[in-house]
Length: 134
Image (tube, rainbow, N blue to C red):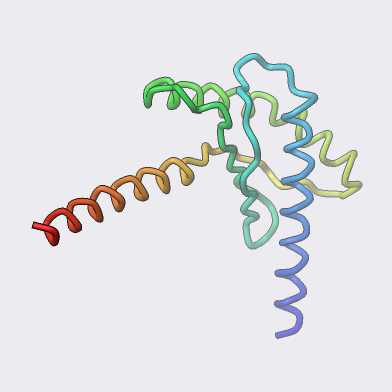
């Protein structure tokens, strides 16, 4: 049982290191014009450590409609997928590890979904209060 905790702790540390390093690369080193202003929200490492899903969230979504946001997310993910080889090479150099997991990039839409849920709950609460007041 202690071995499982140690393995889980190690995977969490690796995931956090990947998150920090990939985030730093996105902010300063990648010059692909398709990559919009974004941040790494989560790195989900596979149980064996051979692959990792990197979730990126766009930062500049204010004033954009849904179609523009989806297009920007697709472009950002495509740009990151193109730079995957460079990112893995840099991770190997920076972290000093023998094996860097295979990366796959995904758009993180959880914040927008949460905002929409909050909006709907607020509307529902307003309707309920209005009905109770009548």
